[in-house]
Length: 215
Image 1: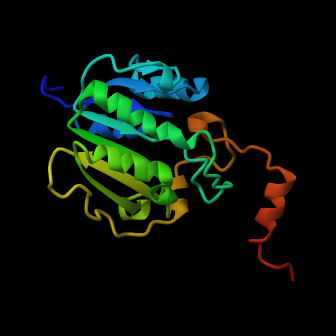
Image 2 (image 1 turned 60 degrees about the horizontal axis):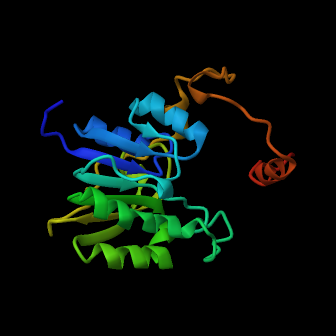
């Protein structure tokens, strides 16, 4: 890795997949913060000893960096939930401002569910970031980037540059799930997180709605 590789700090890191992508592009991950112990263990497998299994509110950057990335909790914004504007997790995205003040990055990347862009938290975050960055936000579809799933995700990018931020569509081919699963055994064996949890009665009732009628 080049000594000039951009240094990246990851907040709400989860399993570290956002950081993993940055590392694949030549960046150096210097700190990844994730308070959930199970997620932090997965993150450590992906990123190594840079993982801090603590609450993002109770720690601070260990040094300056070039990029701060974050995937704040989405439960208060997701259409799968109650979308409660009073959800205490909604304001966690604003912790980014404290970290940006301390780490002085040249860019900030935030990923979340699509409705996040319409939230009060995002509005406040955008307003505060605009004090020092050019900010752009957009909803992208994973299927346009080679993923075997139609999944819309919001990205907010703040940078000290006015150039175009978002990538163009790189893969227009619509793949089927069977292509992604073709290397997995027919029966889940527990390897690579290939498991089959027992669905709840509610989940079973929802699945049955998509079954073809019995003749």
